[in-house]
Length: 152
Image (cartoon, rainbow, N blue to C red; front, side, top):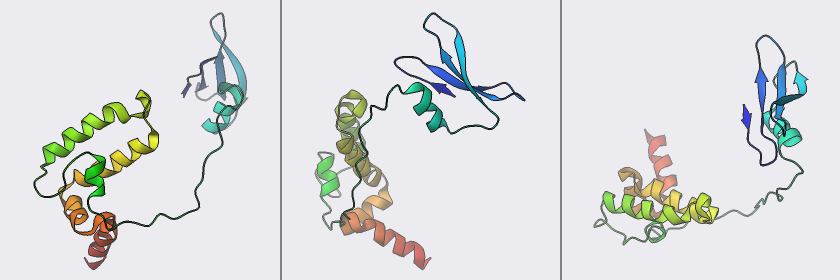
């Protein structure tokens, strides 16, 4: 496994049947072996110990509130900038999605939560059966789909 780091990249490597080795790039070229393991270590542990520098990430945000699903069947269309209803064709959904993600993608400086909401809307509206249920029940379409599957 390769680790990319802004300071010193490296890898977790095993020449079978030898031990697992953590190799880190040297500033003047070459690699140094930092540690050896008999069994494969956790990639997260190796990454944190050798390739992250100091722990610079912020604390994880956890929400304990439960978000109620809405009966609003316009929300996903609005997120994609479309008019709702049967007159919106599948190609319009795809074009609107592609236009939005160009600017909303986190790699291009967009907000990750906005990008998530756009993807959630697109995932529902691109599938004709999901879209039909969404048009009838709003965000509760998932409950209705699950009830239909239980009946089968």
